[in-house]
Length: 254
Image (cartoon, rainbow, N blue to C red; front, side, top):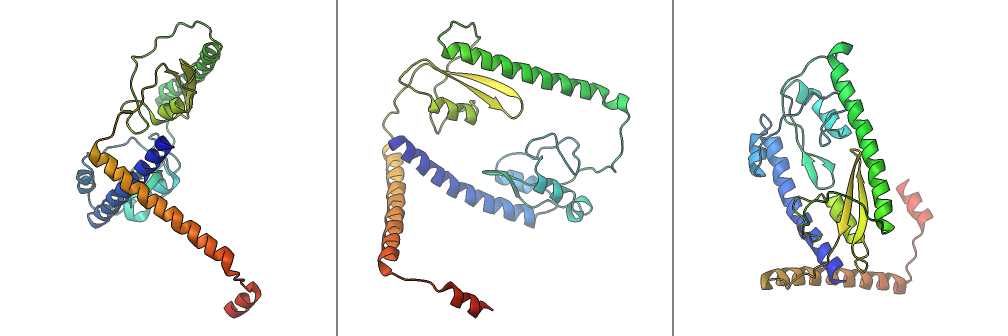
């Protein structure tokens, strides 16, 4: 259970750190609503400029969120050029936006959008073909067949540190049966992309530094204490024999 416990503790520590940053980010976005620069400096990054968006959709995945789009097109943001509130567009991901330029809705001539439409259609078709080919190759690999694939250079990854490897790929890699190596898997993304994964070696984690071990140990004690308290309260509820008269409570509320 050590790996699962460490992962859960890291999630809790990261959650607390994220909550602290999110609170500060929210305050700066609201208090300095005429610019995103102070909020960007708080998280050590720079504001990004998007392409054109509509009330219904945005090409950038982070902006393609119904709540965020509604906020961008609100009167306060659209006309008064103020920041939106910080909106969680995905678990652990906050976005604040402001309008740089606005144009009234209009219908573009077909010739102006033809090239972009052709490119989009071609990319979707290529993506579907890539997924089909990836599934076929995965089937052959899992059957033990020899397949010529230009694999990338091998990388060492842990559950907590995986650098340039996408998180869904790492999660899938850790689900594989490490007793039979090499092991293979495929990961399909919503952007119609397909990644083949090969796990060729498993390396046991080394000893943690004393300060890190102490931090995890303390967090583990807190988790166990919370679980013990929850079990104690549940046991008290079972022994107490308390019953609730719902009809009486409903009458009192009326």
